[in-house]
Image (cartoon, rainbow, N blue to C red; front, side, top):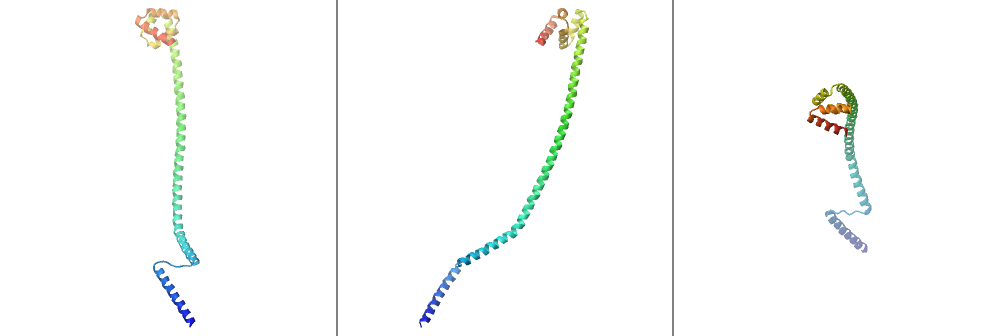
Length: 184
């Protein structure tokens, strides 16, 4: 009889535990042993990772390919710009060379014009030196003042003073003033 009472007690306590477990299960709580919990958790994590791996590999591959295409397009654009810069540099170098040649021609022409001008002034000095002072004074009075001053500069001082004396006083004063400013 003791055994029957013992069995009834065990059965009643088991049914009480089962009822309690049912109430907890109904509330949404599951009761696991620590080993079962770790195993169940590991299985759930592995499933999630596998799902992510499968979907992410495709997405990741697509993203990588898109980025690679974008980088290739950017590299191509940079190569084109680099080519344009090289062409612009070459064009600029050619223009600089052309400009330097034109500059040399211009400077050469200017030098030649200056030499010709000096030669013409010397010829005028020779002509005016051989003129009578009165004629020379008349000619220099109507001539451009800069040319007159250059001519007077190259004539002997005695001859220049005679020419200045025979000129109109106003013209003589203006030429003498320019002559003094030029020699300073």
